[in-house]
Image (tube, rainbow over all chains, first blue to last red; front, top):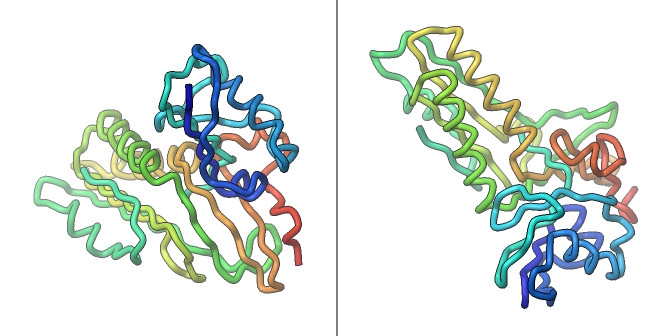
Length: 80
Length: 156
């Protein structure tokens, strides 16, 4: 199945993309998607356990994904 | 109650008018602006970027929590994104309440939560031409790199 990964700010710069379609097995977790990202050039600039939101809500690494989910990798925030 | 992520300049006076009513004896307006120095470095401007749909949802959630916690619906919050110059307002929070203590507390609650949770990022530009991503909220500890993130390869 396919999930959409969104990247922002410093993470988008690190991986050179703001959006990626990632193919994962059925039952894959947020952690699996992060593992996939680690294989990409520039991923060494991501922290070991970045924050993630699934479908616009903060989620943990063991969160199981469904096809079409939007997985956003969230750099340290700086609102205000 | 109203919250928004906006691209245009913030009209803070309009927010005051929006929350004011004869039922509220106290109105607090907080305005956050772009400062010319950060951690000893002269700043020339800030680019704010966001995960807009999530930021809209999160800002609405924060205002909703404040509304319940401090018992007022008279809350308006706007956060601006895009390229801001020195002195520009990046965020404005207007809260009206029958009592001043709750108005102040609600305003403080909203700005502190927003700094922790809102998916907004700041790319600071410095007068020497360099730039750096800065962070204040969640994710700093997880990233293991302290309060600053290097915009690698882009130092002046």
